[in-house]
Length: 75
Image: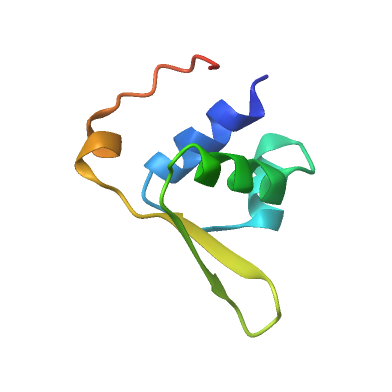
């Protein structure tokens, strides 16, 4: 399983996720590290701190990202 590809697919849904939710959905423990890697690749991932101290993450889509069609391949 390619965790980064799964996280990309999750963000492309337009939903917002906590790191804990991403870890549960991917079966990993690397959500924050993966989000940092995606940001370095140019992904515009926003975050907001929640009252419980966790962060909520979501993708700010642009034309380039919106046109990409995820096919389940790992890059």
